[in-house]
Length: 268
Image (tube, rainbow, N blue to C red):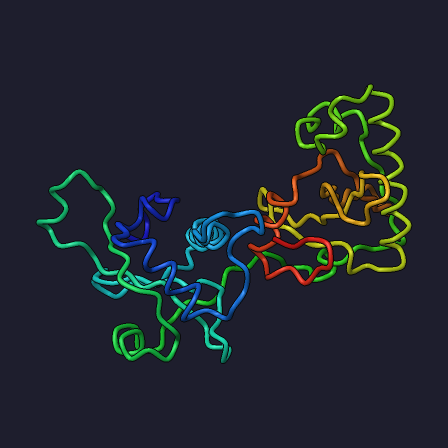
């Protein structure tokens, strides 16, 4: 099972009563945090589901899923913790041969989310539990360096992302959209130089990037979009470039893969 080319959680495991399991994880097991966006009309823990599916892909790519010797069970570290700081694992059991005759090809069944001290985990894996996913090797990549210039690709940002701009901007002439975007970028350049915490790291396409708040609504201090900045190195010179922007929901989902964002502007 260790070498099989499986990338998605639901290809790896049949997940009966998945919504119940997610609800238990969100409300009873994991340390409390918002798992739905503020405009959600019903609690479905959308952020948590997205998080788990992406975390599974990451630990699978790292070969960071633990299996028993006979492949009867498997588990991975979710990267989540309880309120008492215990790590939480997703625990799987191999499906019985009879069950494999149905239309589902997943070789495992999700049995439970368990904290590290759970007797079942300790008995079956004998303490041989996997570590959390590794998203970065250079901690400095998580912090905006104010000595580096930020060079945005304005044309590309507008042309490829105009559908993400606030509704009140979509009827404006292109020149006015450009002026507002350039003004918002100038402002955030100045703000991040004196407050590096404004830059929120995200994980996307196997890279660490930094998210910066763009305030495009006149008179409002709230961010409308997140500018995506990443480092480019040429010889001894390092700069940030930005060629896209994200809605705040997209940005939060990407940022949450690394850690719960501690930000005053990027909130669910």
